[in-house]
Length: 89
Image (cartoon, rainbow, N blue to C red; front, side, top):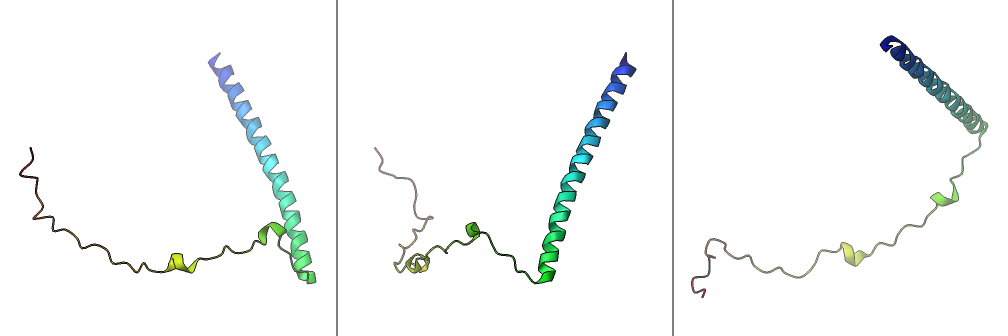
């Protein structure tokens, strides 16, 4: 019984692997054909045009946001002299 289950599992894995390899081969073939067609167009002198979605205007840059703040920060406290409150009620 164990041998039969193991053989069935092995057959199932073999079929799944074969189907995956065939699927990758078909997809790869279509992609390769598309690349060959694009290469032929480039060799013929055609220039690829970017899609309209890729033509976005740049975001406006606010120069005041890039500037260094002109205010002076407060001086740091000396932590060594700062202790717990002595007159706490």
